[in-house]
Image 1 (cartoon, rainbow, N blue to C red):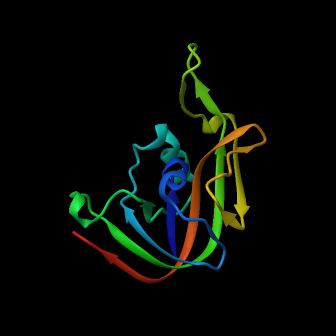
Image 2 (image 1 turned 30 degrees about the vertical axis):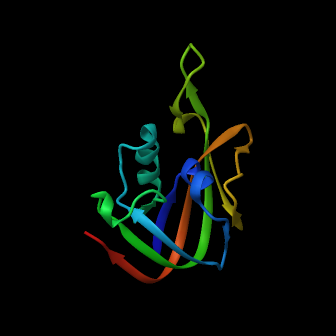
Length: 136
Protein backbone atom coordinates (compact mmCIF):
# COMPACT_ATOMS: atom_id res chain seq x y z
CA UNK A 1 0.00 0.00 0.00
CA UNK A 2 1.17 3.49 -0.83
CA UNK A 3 0.09 6.60 1.11
CA UNK A 4 -0.18 9.71 -1.09
CA UNK A 5 -0.72 13.31 0.03
CA UNK A 6 -2.81 15.48 -2.28
CA UNK A 7 -2.91 19.25 -1.80
CA UNK A 8 -6.43 20.56 -2.45
CA UNK A 9 -5.26 23.53 -4.56
CA UNK A 10 -3.37 21.24 -6.92
CA UNK A 11 -6.21 18.76 -7.19
CA UNK A 12 -8.73 21.55 -7.86
CA UNK A 13 -6.43 22.90 -10.56
CA UNK A 14 -5.50 19.75 -12.42
CA UNK A 15 -6.93 16.66 -10.74
CA UNK A 16 -9.61 14.26 -11.90
CA UNK A 17 -12.35 13.09 -9.54
CA UNK A 18 -11.81 9.61 -8.12
CA UNK A 19 -13.58 7.33 -5.69
CA UNK A 20 -12.94 4.21 -3.64
CA UNK A 21 -12.07 1.31 -5.92
CA UNK A 22 -10.99 3.48 -8.87
CA UNK A 23 -7.73 2.75 -10.65
CA UNK A 24 -5.44 5.81 -10.60
CA UNK A 25 -2.11 6.69 -12.19
CA UNK A 26 -0.39 9.64 -10.57
CA UNK A 27 2.95 11.40 -10.76
CA UNK A 28 4.36 11.88 -7.28
CA UNK A 29 7.27 13.72 -5.78
CA UNK A 30 9.04 13.21 -2.45
CA UNK A 31 7.27 14.45 0.66
CA UNK A 32 8.46 17.96 1.56
CA UNK A 33 8.34 18.33 5.36
CA UNK A 34 8.61 22.12 5.06
CA UNK A 35 5.51 22.41 2.89
CA UNK A 36 2.15 23.72 4.11
CA UNK A 37 3.16 25.87 7.06
CA UNK A 38 3.79 22.99 9.47
CA UNK A 39 0.94 20.75 8.35
CA UNK A 40 3.47 18.07 7.47
CA UNK A 41 4.90 18.09 10.96
CA UNK A 42 1.50 17.34 12.43
CA UNK A 43 0.66 14.71 9.80
CA UNK A 44 4.03 13.01 10.10
CA UNK A 45 3.36 12.59 13.83
CA UNK A 46 -0.07 11.05 13.09
CA UNK A 47 0.73 8.78 10.17
CA UNK A 48 3.26 5.95 10.02
CA UNK A 49 4.55 7.28 6.70
CA UNK A 50 3.69 9.31 3.64
CA UNK A 51 5.15 7.77 0.50
CA UNK A 52 4.69 10.65 -1.91
CA UNK A 53 2.98 13.88 -2.78
CA UNK A 54 0.67 14.04 -5.81
CA UNK A 55 2.04 16.37 -8.46
CA UNK A 56 0.16 17.43 -11.56
CA UNK A 57 2.90 19.87 -12.58
CA UNK A 58 6.08 17.79 -12.54
CA UNK A 59 7.51 15.23 -14.89
CA UNK A 60 10.89 13.55 -15.27
CA UNK A 61 12.18 16.59 -17.23
CA UNK A 62 11.55 18.96 -14.32
CA UNK A 63 14.79 18.13 -12.51
CA UNK A 64 12.85 16.98 -9.43
CA UNK A 65 12.88 13.28 -8.57
CA UNK A 66 9.44 12.00 -9.50
CA UNK A 67 7.70 8.67 -9.28
CA UNK A 68 4.63 7.04 -10.70
CA UNK A 69 1.95 5.46 -8.54
CA UNK A 70 -0.47 3.15 -10.28
CA UNK A 71 -3.12 1.16 -8.44
CA UNK A 72 -6.54 1.02 -6.85
CA UNK A 73 -7.83 3.56 -4.32
CA UNK A 74 -8.52 1.75 -1.05
CA UNK A 75 -9.01 4.68 1.34
CA UNK A 76 -9.54 8.44 1.07
CA UNK A 77 -9.25 10.72 4.08
CA UNK A 78 -9.96 14.43 4.13
CA UNK A 79 -7.97 16.48 6.64
CA UNK A 80 -9.45 19.78 7.82
CA UNK A 81 -7.77 22.36 10.07
CA UNK A 82 -8.68 25.61 11.67
CA UNK A 83 -6.49 28.31 10.16
CA UNK A 84 -4.28 30.92 11.77
CA UNK A 85 -4.73 34.55 10.72
CA UNK A 86 -2.59 37.63 11.17
CA UNK A 87 -4.11 40.76 12.69
CA UNK A 88 -4.41 42.06 9.12
CA UNK A 89 -6.74 39.16 8.31
CA UNK A 90 -4.22 37.39 6.08
CA UNK A 91 -4.17 33.61 6.47
CA UNK A 92 -0.83 32.27 7.69
CA UNK A 93 -1.49 28.53 7.73
CA UNK A 94 -3.22 25.72 9.55
CA UNK A 95 -3.26 25.51 13.32
CA UNK A 96 -3.37 21.79 14.16
CA UNK A 97 -3.41 22.53 17.89
CA UNK A 98 -6.73 24.37 17.54
CA UNK A 99 -8.69 21.59 15.91
CA UNK A 100 -8.23 18.87 13.35
CA UNK A 101 -10.89 16.77 11.66
CA UNK A 102 -10.04 13.67 9.68
CA UNK A 103 -12.97 12.09 7.88
CA UNK A 104 -13.17 9.14 5.52
CA UNK A 105 -14.46 10.04 2.08
CA UNK A 106 -15.97 7.81 -0.60
CA UNK A 107 -15.19 10.21 -3.43
CA UNK A 108 -12.75 13.06 -3.97
CA UNK A 109 -13.97 15.89 -6.18
CA UNK A 110 -11.75 18.73 -4.99
CA UNK A 111 -14.87 20.56 -3.89
CA UNK A 112 -14.74 19.37 -0.28
CA UNK A 113 -14.05 22.75 1.26
CA UNK A 114 -15.55 23.23 4.73
CA UNK A 115 -16.23 20.85 7.60
CA UNK A 116 -17.49 22.12 10.95
CA UNK A 117 -16.05 25.57 10.23
CA UNK A 118 -12.65 24.22 9.20
CA UNK A 119 -10.93 24.45 5.83
CA UNK A 120 -9.59 21.41 4.01
CA UNK A 121 -5.81 21.20 3.81
CA UNK A 122 -5.13 17.68 2.51
CA UNK A 123 -6.39 14.45 1.11
CA UNK A 124 -4.51 11.35 2.26
CA UNK A 125 -5.12 8.51 -0.19
CA UNK A 126 -4.17 4.87 0.28
CA UNK A 127 -3.42 3.20 -3.04
CA UNK A 128 -2.98 -0.55 -3.44
CA UNK A 129 -0.20 -0.33 -5.97
CA UNK A 130 0.21 -2.54 -8.98
CA UNK A 131 3.32 -0.70 -10.15
CA UNK A 132 5.67 1.80 -8.57
CA UNK A 133 8.59 3.30 -10.43
CA UNK A 134 11.05 6.10 -9.71
CA UNK A 135 12.45 8.37 -12.40
CA UNK A 136 15.75 10.12 -11.88
